[in-house]
Structures are given as C-alpha cells and as structure tokens.
Image 1: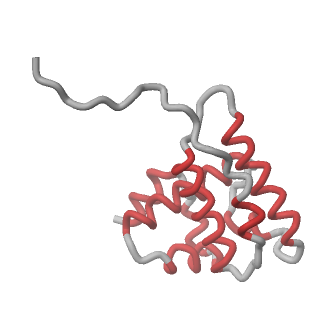
Image 2: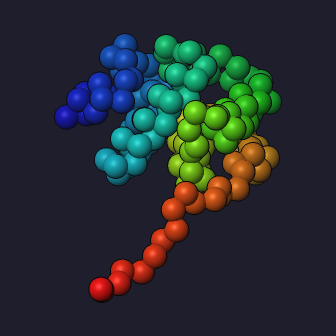
Amino acid sequence: MLKQQKQKVGVEEEDDGSRAYFNFEHSLNSPYTKRMYIFALNKYMQHYNVKRVDDLLIHRHNPSKIEEQIIDWLVFLRRDSNFTIALKTRKLYLSAILAFYEINDVILRKRKIAKFLGEEGARKRKDRAYRLR
C-alpha cells in the first residue's frame, strides 16, 4: 500500500534505496502524517527541480544555505500570484521539511525560518451560521 502512496505523491521508486528517505519515512508513525509529509517533501523537491531525495542533502555541511532555500520557498508560497497557500498549509509544509532535515542530522535555526511563514490571508468567503427560512 505504501508503494501506491509513493506513486500518488510522485516520490520516485529509486528513492527507496536512499538512506535519507528511509530515515524520513520510517520516523513518521501516523499513516496520514506520512502521506502529507511525503507530499510536502515532493512539493519542495519540485520547486527546486530535484529528482533524488539525497540531492537535498548536498549542502548538509552548510546549514545556512539550506535555511536560505527553505526561506525562499516559503516566501514563494506566500507571494505566488497563481494561487495562495493558507498559513496552516505552509506550516505543514515547513514541519515536513524541518522533520526531513532533522532526522538526517542537519541542524537548522527553526525560529528564524518560521518567521518567514507570513500571516493568515483574508478569507475569500465569510463563514455564516446556518439559518432556517
């Protein structure tokens, strides 16, 4: 079943042999969290045109470079004119990326990165109470 989930979110089969991906996947307990974090990791990889999970760790010895990439991606998610990503979704994406780097022994300044999440945007529709006519 997990192979089906990987194919749904686009993680390539060759990443099964990657120790970094193995660490990340098996550190997550909940099937829902696993699915969402893999999806978020895939989105991050797509943004930087990365094909293999191990390529995310190229700058493992230069955490400030990784921090810059994450910050740039968060700013992109906030400012993309084609669609808007809700704050809670950006937090989910950030949690997934930070979990990936943390489980693979890359120490990042989380508070600094989190400052770039931005604020909740205005809702397009107002919630209203249900009324009977």
